[in-house]
Length: 90
Image 1: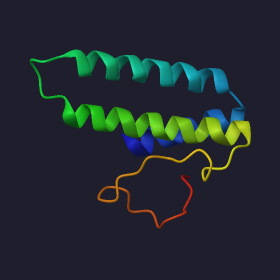
Image 2: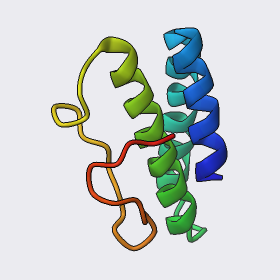
Image 3: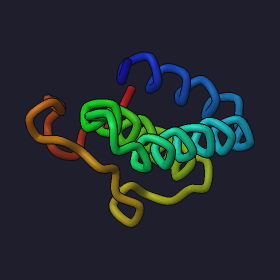
Image 4: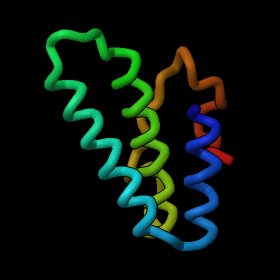
C-alpha cells in the first residue's frame, strides 16, 4: 500500500492539490484515533501503516509548500524503508 499512496501523493503534488492531500491526511488521522481508542483489537500493524501513509502525505504537503524534508522530516522505519538515506520518494 505504501507504493500506492506514494503514487497518489505524487499525482496530487504534480496537480498542486493540497486540499486533496489535507483531506487524505484528515481521514487517516481519524482512522488512527479510532484505532487507538479500541481496546478489544490488536491494531498495531494497521496503525503503523496509517502512520507511514500520513508521513508520505506530509512529505507531499511539504513539497507543495516548498519546505525541505530536512526541516519537515518524514518518519521512516529502517527495517521496511530500503531507500538510501536522503533519497526522495518517487
